[in-house]
Structures are given as structure tokens and as C-alpha cells.
Image (cartoon, rainbow over all chains, first blue to last red; front, side):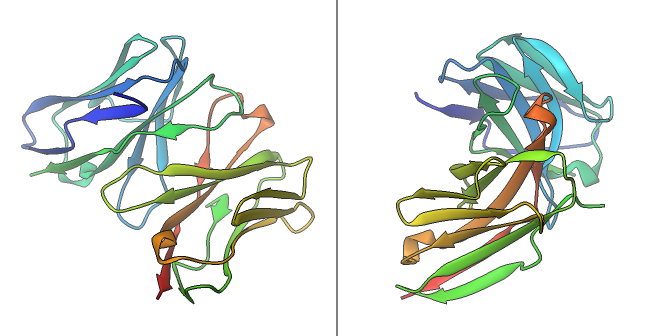
Length: 113
Length: 114
């Protein structure tokens, strides 16, 4: 596998469910990101991790809980989501969290019922 | 208030002609700009970038122009090909991008007709 992979690609969950999104990067990068893309809105940065440490939480509700066990893996744990959380969740990585190009995974299309 | 604006939600161009996608920004601290291309059911793919110390960067058919005084950048694709049909996102970062915080526009959907 090369680049940035995300699983699952599609997810349907109820508001009381707990699920996790997984991201893995095979680029040797040290920074990883979670973005949310809702319909007709720009990509919104959610979290930034640099060398496994969270460096930014962009005012994301606590029902989204990120986890970064190492520089190659990033998780987004989901709990008691709302229908308005339905969106495309994109993971990205970059060599560091400074001014460099980010490489995106294919995204997880989430539907909350 | 949006800091990065792509005012044209869509653009249609004939194959072989030039496609010009525009992007405006409001934050004068932005010093690095990127264009991403996104096909349906895929994540954004990096296309080309430009630092604020330059006013032009070229890569094959793709050229990005930056006008700092107007806070405007544009992506030129020439000649346009049907495979270029996708959504194009402009993104910007500033203050050295120290927080890795890329600010994206809403995107412009480009359709290149054969």
C-alpha cells in the first residue's frame, strides 16, 4: 500500500453507536490531519497531530475523539453523533506540520441516521 | 467569514482551450498557496503550489499566478483535457503554516467538454 489509506470508505451509523475511522500513511510523514467536508462547504480542519502530539483542535465537539498511536496511524473515534455530522471525513499527512504540502486519503463517507 | 474564496462554483471549457480558475483571499499573512484537484469518491490530490516570494509557478500544463497586492491567485490549465474535469480547491496557509492549518475555498467544478 502506498500513500494515505482510510477505512472504512463508507459508514452508516445510528446516533447511539460508537465507531472509529482509521487512517494510515505510508509516506514516512510526521504530521497527520483530520478534515471534515460537508456539502457546499470548504474543507474544515478538525485536528492536527505532529510526532503523535496533538497540536491543534479546531473547536471540535467532544463526540469526536482523535487518537494518534504513532506517526503512521490516526484514528477518529465517533460517539453519539448527530445527523448534521454526516459528511466526508478526510485524513491527510505531511512531512511536518509546518508549511508543506498535505497529501490526502480517499475519505470516509459518513451517514448518521 | 471566509478567508479563501472561490467565487465561481462551476466552469465549463472546450477541450484544447485554456481553463482559468480564480481564488481570492483576505488574510495578508497567508504566504503559501496550493491547488488541489478532486475527483468524485476520491480525496483531494495536490496539483501545484506557490510561495508568496514568487508570482508564478509552472508545472507542465498547469501554471499558478499570484498577485499579492490584489490578494488573488489563479490556476491556468492549457490545453484543457476532458480528464481535467474535477473540482479544484484553492488553499492557503500563513504565518509559516506553523499550525499546519490550510484554509480551503469551497471549490470550483471544472467541466472540459470534448
